[in-house]
Length: 56
Image (cartoon, rainbow, N blue to C red):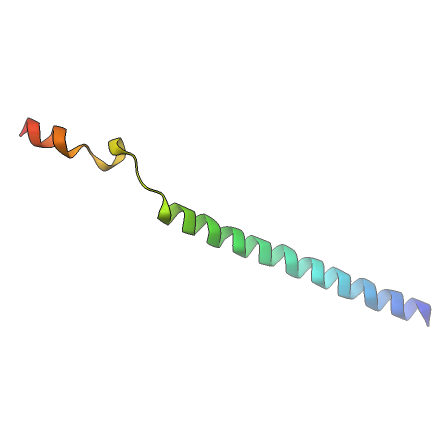
């Protein structure tokens, strides 16, 4: 009787652990995508409009 309960609890804990790991990976990818979209580019990456207008 005790072995059945221990095996059942072990399987449930393992399933919960796997669920948390996969959920964490999904959330990490979403967070990285969100942070990459919210990142403001520096002046050099955007192109300095003042300098480009002066050269024309």
